[in-house]
Length: 495
Ligand code: NAP
Image (tube, rainbow, N blue to C red; front, top):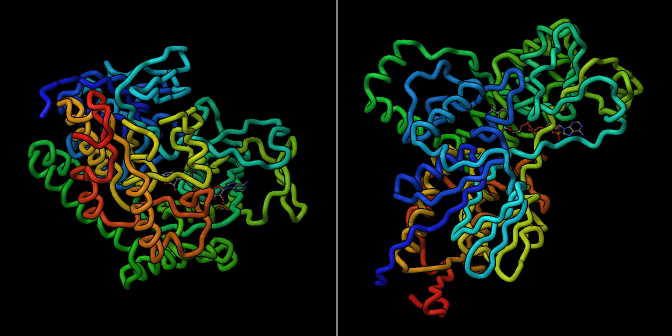
């Protein structure tokens, strides 16, 4: 074996949950030549950008955390957005990785030159790197709907992912468009204070009851603080228990039917008014879209000052919203809870790999990668929470950490001079995607609904396997799935 020892120059794009996990994992393995480019003014990704009223994570806090930084004293069973944001910032400081981050700078282009990456930022600098790791997130680019007249509206129009903290909705007439997890949370939060609230609900979603506001008992926090081993055991137990979600979503069984039934029951038990219940009943199967959970929405939408509007929007005027039945509702504020362009990943960055190949060209029909992390034509580049990530079934922290450890093994080979360039083969990528397509068949996501899980090509962009399969696929690189180049030998595949 070669005796070279190198400290690779690594650029991580994004300081959200995945970028933080990656940077810490790399630093823990001795990689110190890191640059993290973050376009926001702070760490946290979605938890930095989203600060709309009512923002709460619907994954239990004791699971929604890093394995290496379990927090004993979450204030609630389901933490609020600000508490998660503070947790992430604390972890960044605790692990001393803030020094690697450049804030307020966006990566405009990343080009592979043949031997290294040239990464150009909005600050006009071009950085050189041996590896580029894309941790750019999934739910980042707000989807602003193309509704006629939207720009004519005289009052404030705000997308939930770019909330204006100075906006005061109390005593005002508020329109909320969108009925996913976000719309449901915003309605619940704003209903009480507004004079009228209209929920423009194009397609209702199943909403599972959950005690979102429940506090974590102090005695539990004290116990977890005092006994780190118990804390870690609890985290592992929750991780194992969360396997139920991958099971019910990917495999048709009585367990799936039971959970689906409980979503239906949730609606029946909470909404007594028959016509409201009918209007709130989705056409598709529970769990087909990202499951919405709430303990307060049904109560909020049944309140005196609330109105569910199921008729499609026709256009927006200077003073309100007109629906296709000719009704015009006067409103003061419009809230767009209309989701994200979820398949952009690192775009609009101009990303070009070997021989100038552009990501936009090869992803015309939707994102495609090998095991969520490698893309043919893009040597020494990995994505963390890239295409097919388990946004609907498995802990994303677990996934990000696992992927980061996988990447570390490539960095180790580079460090030791074993390999200079690593690029996944087209065959291995095609093979993986064939397995994905087959496994997606019986998943509930494929049961006929339209959701943000679907790509431009109509395929489901999710992880259709369980956590064990993921762990097996990303524990050790399969060298045969990659073109490995040692530039000294200049002979591809020779090691
Ligand atoms: P979403 O689930 O994509 O929902 C977007 C909503 O906007 C849908 O109801 C959609 O209706 C509606 N919409 C879009 N364009 C429209 C138009 N032109 N006219 C009328 N309605 C329109 O987005 P989201 O609610 O922001 O949630 C996205 C994901 O973020 C969630 O699934 C979840 O993964 C994550 N999230 C998580 C939490 C959490 O607690 N962890 C909280 C919020 C969000 P159609 O269904 O008819 O298209």
